[in-house]
Image (cartoon, rainbow, N blue to C red):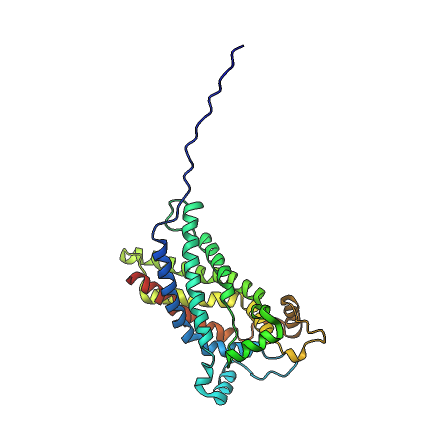
Length: 303
């Protein structure tokens, strides 16, 4: 019986998708322009952030020291002057540069990856995809977020290390991760959503879909408010954990977990306690995010 030869099909080597060229140059732009935008935003928002943290971290077992944001501003200004509101800005300024550049870099890179793997050939991604890209970029940037504004950073670093070791610098990271992942989805989603509405309006009225500076600023302001309002309770819990009075720790020195602090605040102060300081946070985030997006988009369009 003659042997039957079976022809073995020869397959062409599979061509792997590749990201757009010039990734190195684009990454450098994201780092430089994102850093500049982040530092500009931090200069605007820092005094408001100082007040926000002081409002959030008021001990639940004591009478409230501040009746509201304006009272906190007044007391802080009387105690330390205008300079006191900017005390300790060096570390947050550096953090803002790193975080914002990381956000824009991750957001663009994730979109490029989606265009190759999920939506091949599609220049403008669907809105849900942009929200997903924003959430992913926020989770990448969450380790960059600290949220504390110490008067003497070196002294605080030493105290944290003595009390909790290296892990103390990531205390409250669960709240930060929740806030950054969901908040960044809202941040980029708010900006992209409002920008899309402006582009449609511009196309119908002036036959161009490019945004003016004031439209970018409105979209950025919307992004900042969305970011802070939707996930503000997670930020409150994170601030409570980071400013916990170590003199009131139990005998075993065990710290409270994120969920224990959440239950404690909810039982003692309810929803109002979760959102204490939210008004001033949204008020500062609107101009801050407006400047961040305008500076970033302006630099990108110029260079």
